Image 1: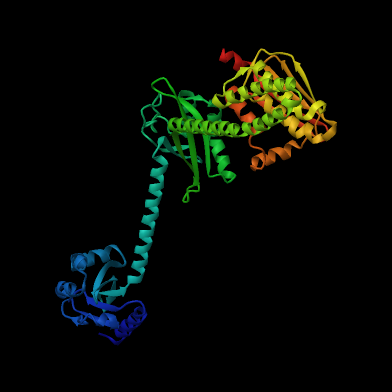
Image 2: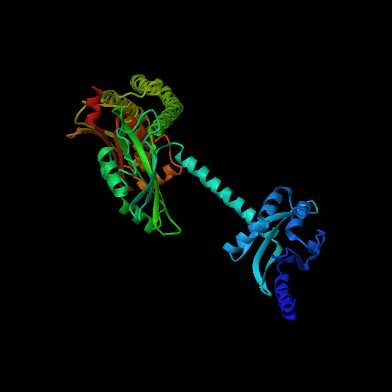
Length: 502
């Protein structure tokens, strides 16, 4: 070997020392080999650093140092024919395997290349330790797999109760994927959604669904499920949108649905995509209805229970006052007992059932209550009855508590001056109206409502009356009040309710 060639070898070797544990030089004509350098770690493997036939001794050395699972692979890849073929196709020939070292398996890489020396072809083959890099890649791969599995789990959760789904490229107006059929439940869409071959564009599919499936909120679906609207949603930062609608089913029924659009930007193309999922809301609406019914029944029960606790308080006070009057004015006491009986009967009726009764019966209770209160107030309490109509029904203990509020919180607070309470009924074209007006001290309605919302107000007052009237009679309660002037409470009962009841 010429001196110049040796110098070149040394330069090559020195260049590779920093990254490789050893470098083999194989003469491809004679198969002889030698090494330029061995790291301490590699030297501990006790591999000959030169020999007459690299390819003959290869299987023995492989069995000695290579991990069992990788031995056949390394022998096959480093056979002379495969090595030559690989180097002819690529500038570098590379393989990764594991070396057995101190009961551990350490990843290594062989990288080989052709180099001419004195007109003969040599293969320079470097061996380097890539264990830390491979371990990082393996950890990264596991992390990616975990993220992928998490994504798949999320996808399964999203699609678990889905009736149908579609994957859409909104930017290109292309349908990428869709489920085979709609409503994987007992009921199915009246028509099968066309295939991607039949309708490849989202705009066309959107129009087809509007025209062939949607029966309720078609206008809303046409707008909120459109490609233009979804792209605008993404532009303003919304990554999710939805629309409620109903579809026809094969059984001739109407199926409530919600379509949710999950919006995202595809990283490689920057196109905006949407994953569109249609959910069957039948069971959800059924459960929601049952929940609301239970909540209503629970609240009604609480109202009745509280009413049953509140009424004795008033009744005991009334009985005590009547007892004081009996000896002084028996005739007046007898009238008061009659009024007391009327009021007691109304209280018992409201505790046992909450059904509408003729307004005359509720007015009888109102008058009885006012007469009992006059026992305390005397002429300071003045009641005025302006009954324009009595041809309707109302829930028991609805007008009376309003009158009670007017007296206790309006008239009584005026002191010696006392005040007036007006009870009116009238009919409009489509409703029955009851008004209770007083010229008491008045109050701030907004402040009262705020206290009700925070639980600081009287929970057995106007809000309970409002709740009962709305739930049972679809009626409306309105309160207007001005401090220093007085309060007007208006009950409006739709005539349609009375007609349906008859």
